[in-house]
Length: 104
Image 1: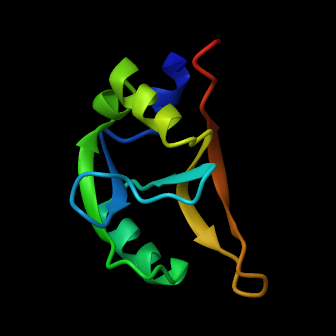
Image 2: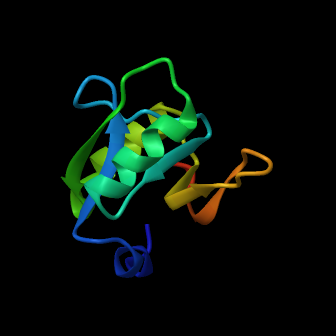
């Protein structure tokens, strides 16, 4: 992950989780948020059958070799940062961070 990625992420990144640890995602997409409030507001919009709660983790931890390996294991290749939902189409949109394959 390039150093520029850290310039767009806050020190603490929030994601949604069902169990307090594992990131909820929609493969190949994951979702990072700048604040716990933004994550909590987004959760019901995804209409998941799970009760999703925000959890915060230092960005450097999420984007460490171990964190990136976990994203690869989940088959996540793109991360939305502070995503929005288009009210007309229901599509998720926003800034996307691409996760390179482990071979790169």
